[in-house]
Image 1 (cartoon, one colour):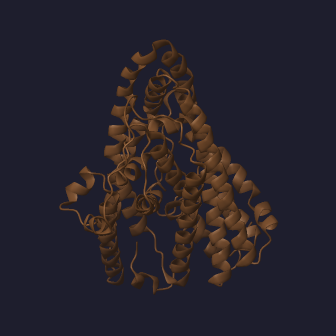
Image 2 (tube, helix red, strand yellow):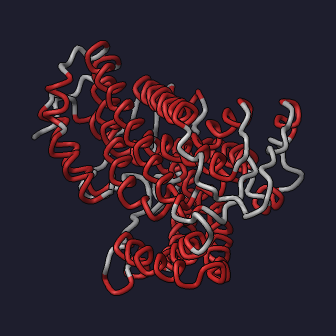
Image 3 (cartoon, one colour):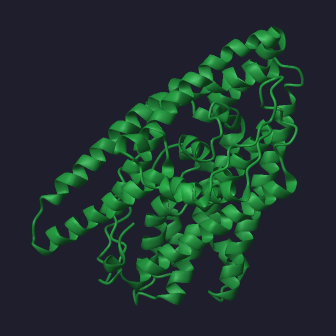
Length: 441
């Protein structure tokens, strides 16, 4: 993240978001590599589940051989997750000018909303315990508590022995320290070059963009294989005694996530009523088109033009609208954070593990960073999930089971993400008005 000195200068003029929907992030499209046959990923996932259930029922215990498929795909996904997140965060830091009082206030509001979202998710998960009875652990195995670490050990582990160690172990805390150090250093160099009128720094931006796009290209190939992982993990579970119980637990997970997102939306409306002095009904009415488009596309970036028009009709200034709607694509993912924190606790419960209060705090910290890194990554919630699981020592090979319901929850949490962007835009215009004219409808 930029240092405090970077917030001293007034914000620079914004570019036209219609020309660059991601506003500071490399364009990410749903390329053919991730849409085999031209069908969306969720269609292939649903088809994989439909094929896997009869295979598992017919093959029985022999279907465990299909666990090889999710293991291979998750290893590839885990290998890509760390460099993707680092590259995405670095590019977001370097290419975005988050300056002035508005920039500082925006990041503060994003932080508060994301923390509230994760606390809601963890609170409901501890209360309802949706993972109980899922029986995802190995048959005949005993549920062992996860090895606990002291606070001093966690602090020491923030500093890796080598840069390679942080990537090799997928230690997201160490990756955050490295990324922040590199990002702040690059911002300092960028500002110095600007003051001197030099343009050499653009080469660094270009290299970051090319590196991100290269990793994204490989990721799309892996994402296209995800239905095979779903087929393998579902068939192997259904083939075991009481294997269908996992689907009942997934229904509970859907209810917990949707309920949590509903609570998060109520938090947004409370902020509107108390701090922005705006009627919640007026806010929801103004955001109706945005919510409909976001739920249908499951894309924050694709909704940016509609978001800007809706904020303009609410009387929000152009500068506040562009700042929050565009930069929020990278830095604000409240719904994603809520889902990832809930999924981590669900998986621990399903495997029979126990996450202590320290572990859940660690989940909050790692999810906060992972949700930022997932902003510009397609299907970022499950791409970064291995990093969160690694932080609390949960096995990542069961993650594909979550993809059977992810296509629906993705639309729900993306809608929450955009509502969070709009909420911060309205609050920012009230708390730190830029003095600009309202955006055109």
